[in-house]
Image (cartoon, rainbow, N blue to C red; front, side, top):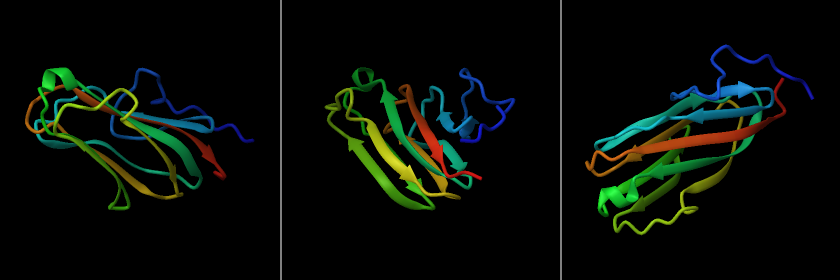
Length: 132
């Protein structure tokens, strides 16, 4: 197994739309945001390896009062996950999506809070296989 150099931007405290690598692990943390409708939380292109990972969406469900929360995850503009809650009935654990991401894939994660302006975030963690 080859160990990659740690990028200067690879910090546990680092948030943003991009993907960061530490060895053969990767992550992207949107940070807390108030979409005020729909907004891009994550947007990155994967490298030459495939990734086994998971997305996790968190939101202020109680404070949202049953507003129209949604998460959309796209690979190369194709929707692979769409989950929406309009009745404030999401439970912890319902917001985790396990995926395999092919090499050289454009990944976009969108969050929507129905205009409630409540805190939301989208995280991705994974392991990279077969990278050269």
